[in-house]
Length: 428
Image 1 (cartoon, rainbow, N blue to C red):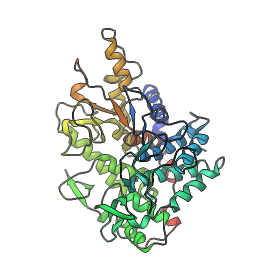
Image 2: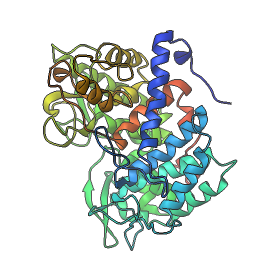
Image 3: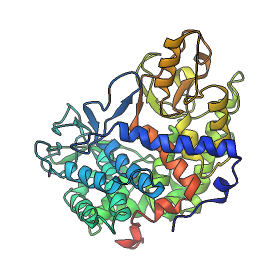
Image 4: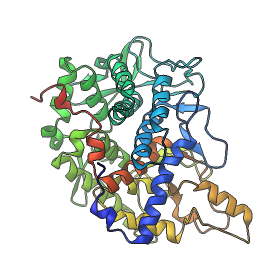
């Protein structure tokens, strides 16, 4: 039986109506970005262009699988299980004409591939993107276990087909290789970051590997979280990867939703709340920005300046707000739903916006925010020649979907659908 949280049930009707619309639209953006034949998902949804894009993101495909689980739970899509199976067949090489590129010796997936053929689009073989794909596969396998048990079988087969040992760069300090190349791991990245997920999945994939065990037990196990690198912000200890810097808020969010031990850890919960507070407090330094505008997330800035950027405290060019970051923090900051509602009601009424004096503006605005709140520049919202975001990256949008699901159903929706480390190996 699906649980409904008190914070959702107690929402005022107008806010609940907004929540329900934004929640379903969070799924529909994924649906609009899916290739029907191969089940692969685009890297981004183009607000002012045609969809789905030809460029598939393997990480977005993993999130797409989770979005189908949400849609199935909510009754939005009675074909969700069949679609998930198509996606699993697509990434497994079981659809004619589609062989998703993988590193020959280790099995890691290419980051970006052609939506139809699976051909590598000049990208690296990525350990984190492979992890995001397979996390979604395991999630879907558990969710659809009753009516589509083959999804779980395919997910576990893919998990075991990868040589996870190459992700270990330094098992004593938690350094993880970002890229697989010629059978080896390269591009090491120091902890802490979202690569916690790579360590988690590596342990699920090769629990008998002592280096993989040590990587987790020495750095990322629950009793080690408090020893990860941290930075102080106004008296708040925030997890980070190197002194003097902060991380984009999505980095804290992905492990919270996709590593069960972290969702259930009192220690991680405190750091997660700190990250939420630090994000909000930093935005308050911008004295001409209202309190309901915040969120240091990653995403595209096309048409405004530069390109894709992972915004963070003290490194956020032009201060672009990412509403989906607020969404991702809702399980620990439920009042954030009123921040999102204020953005919608006062500035971005995406489903009811009209401009009789400028129908071109109306059309562009409705298209730019067709599926709801994402990235926006506060200072450009009210300008005559406003900035219309041209795309939404699916991996970043995932925070909105995850956060709204967690707000409505509680974090058990996530923790019950992913295996725990203790299911394969005991922490030392």
